[in-house]
Length: 173
Image (cartoon, rainbow, N blue to C red; front, top):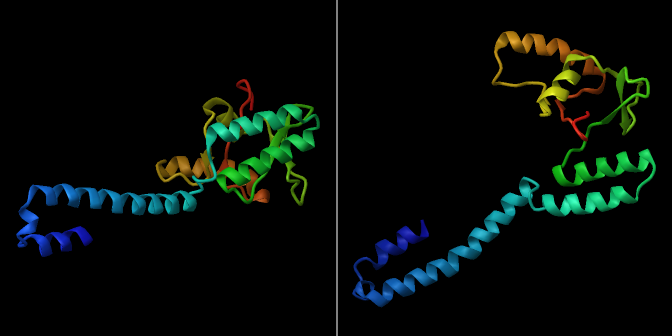
């Protein structure tokens, strides 16, 4: 808008016809707009948590910290803290497979009521095979599939889950 108004104003000026004017005008525009672009980009990054999330740095810090931890409680607490600080998740649970291998139980943070998800549950099997997050409501799916999926999600009603994200290690959930 600013440039359009400036163009209309200077269009009839005699100095605007000079080749040096075009060069100087271009330099002024570049010098003025680049800081504005950077300021806007920082605002967008901050809104979408991008300024706090630098994957190589997060991996480096996480790997170093995990290598020094020996207790499971410390490890899952650290993973939760990392997820919370990088992606901005404020509510959720980290599930680990129970010793009997029949179910997954939330280990951090502990749920208010005992809960487990059977290892043979359709959502667990989908997480294992696809290795991709599963949203509770997927607008790209057909109506018939959504009805079937809703039945699978009812199991997670006690913890009010809306999204399942697999954490895979060597192909294991």
